[in-house]
Length: 334
Ligand code: SF4
Image (cartoon, rainbow, N blue to C red; front, top):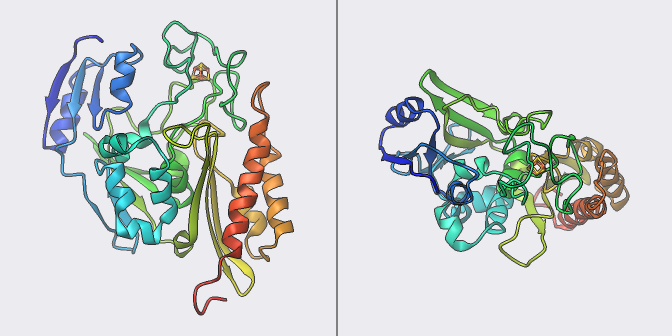
């Protein structure tokens, strides 16, 4: 690991200035991904600005009835929050399906969104990787890619986004708020991750030097009837092969609202809007759910080694939505 400077601050403006003043400076929160990448020689920040002492760790009510997750709230705190568990259960389930207890105690909301792909070639500086070294090529396309993308990839990169937490946040239309030295801004999570294109190293729409301050969950009645299901190669402490965050609200036999997002299939959490539009307003029958799932995966372009993910994604969508549709409606909603 290369030598680096370290600073800790309690002021957002000072944190922004400390990063802006120093080429190669980075914010440090839980460090559960960044420090690993520093040890592997993938990241070499010149200065780390520790943001864990900023007053950004609260989870609170939004004026419109949603929730505000502070950027440095730990994954454990969010998963355990009674309001999250009641109003956005898929979010709590997704976080608990990720990493280990020790990592969740360190990892933060902002850091979770900014974690890098776990493509093995990305983590190995001896391999060609356009995401780590733009223009060097992509070792995964003709290499070991059984756990790589089936949707929205390009010849420049076929990696997936590793976050579980970001999948239900995408389904629930969360918004990322940030601060820069020029002022505050916000980006819907649906626009936060950039399409791969020809620059897979440019992963988010955050302005240079911006610090994530919170993630806002809008109020959504349907989110209270949600579920996260993750398929992985081990029972725990493994990234998703495919995951689904789904929410379904059926009233008087008709789908009043439905949200669905997939993890493990693309460079960003994949909002399954084809499923949502196919189901909304009609009966939640097994036939319609099956047809909707088929429609979503029809656009998949599997690589040589990961066609199984297309079947897996379709079956997972079907299974989770069928389970939600079979649950009794809330009192007065049948
Ligand atoms: Fe790098 Fe992306 Fe190719 Fe993996 S898939 S080697 S991250 S360019």
